[in-house]
Image 1 (cartoon, rainbow over the protein chains, first blue to last red):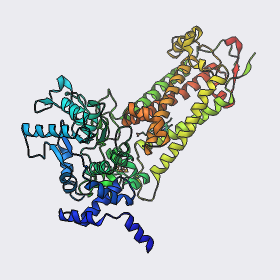
Image 2 (spheres, helix red, strand yellow):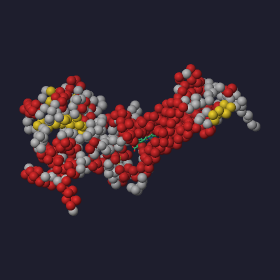
Image 3 (cartoon, chains in turn orange, purple):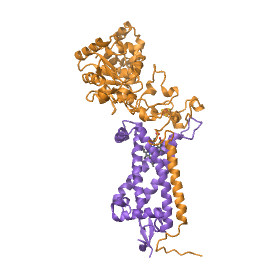
Image 4 (cartoon, rainbow over the protein chains, first blue to last red):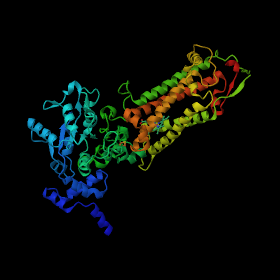
Length: 374
Length: 217
Ligand code: HEM
Ligand code: SF4
């Protein structure tokens, strides 16, 4: 018994904190759930729950400037629909988001002025969040806010931030605006501001739980979580979708849906032959899922399209084929048709050559010491 | 006088046959991995699982075999040497290239007679070794993805950042077909030379010996 009590105590959130959240309208159950989801997502020991709860409350919480450039606001949408519980309440309300084009009440010069003040007052301390990629062609005129180009803004704001978080595939890797032929010369945040500390949270949209967890990590430990060579936090992008997928047993068994709605598809078989890019994609979708942890594409019956990988629009297409098209051949020509063609052509060519060579009698070596019988 | 010459030393023959077995196993399992046509009713089966286990097992065997053969190019006899694979480096080699080409295209009566590889075959082998290398590199790059913090992932990281994993996968897939094409050509040419040179080309890769009449050289 004693051991169990000790265990509960380790992960406990201090009573006064729970009470304060209750007065703010977040039930203790919801708040505990939030803390436990955060520890789980960040793969921290449960004993860290108390520390996380304290950190979210600390008085030195940095303000956030959220900028939107070439994007679809999908990441903002995903974040607003985050539930854990109502990240809107805990993170949005409680963190001071001083600038967010979609959310803020202020507009025009007033809003720009607020941003400037935050940047001055909290120089080197605030968190910059960027959604969307940054166009560079023709001096960056393809995206301007308040008469200033996205490139200038992102350099100013991210240059003075404590950390920058690139949310979504566009900000992280250029995404859809940067897909070939990339008419606006769109680039990622880390390319636009080479000197800044940028963490990438790719995904189309990003998973709001991962963003919340990254912020919580920053509040708790004063730094962003460990990242991989693409600047993605390992807690969220350290495993392939394919290696955590609930359909994996069907993959290993050899059970594949051949078409949408066929018997295999209805039985939840693996979507590999429908072009699933789970084997190519690193993301924690299978464990964290989307929309209040309800589901994620593969669970819903659609193959992964690799949306969180660099240049996914160029490298992961066609979405319903396993392999890309062979460059230089027609769209319909699959790798296997071309391959079979090569093999067949070789067989035919050498077969014909063989017949001709067999009939040919004039090519014996001079010294052939062959005795013909009969 | 017909001479019996020891041409292919045992490491050459051994790696040759390891390559043959591995390529057959890798092509069969690989094509299944690329397009799993067998669909099983039981969830408890492990068809794709076994295909991948076999693929990765032979992948290691194949890689070791290729590396041993590449090293042997620096230790073996003149027929095994890296020089034998680059006939374009010498004048004599050039005349063999042209001669063999003319023979194959029926422009010339006799095959330029050589003890080791014929010049065109040697050039094809250099290209095939290149394909082997690309296959091993792309294979291990894809393989390493199961553990991005692991050894293989760190060794192959440059290739993955240079090419996307889908490009590596397509390359791996297409080279399989090129190797199948090569195998067809290779068996045919070996047969042709066996018949035309009558020096035991086909059996030489089993025993290592060829029967050479120095007058032909
Ligand atoms: C002659 C040598 C080889 C041949 C002919 C071959 C053939 C193939 C083929 C056709 C595929 C399917 C590609 C696709 O459509 O996705 C494949 C997949 C693969 N091969 Fe190879 N391969 C060879 C050597 C290797 C080596 C040396 C490795 C190193 C580990 C390797 C590792 C892999 C991996 C990891 C996959 C993907 C498996 C998966 O996604 O589950 N292969 N191979
Ligand atoms: S559905 Fe996709 S991710 Fe899941 S096991 Fe099949 S191929 Fe892998």
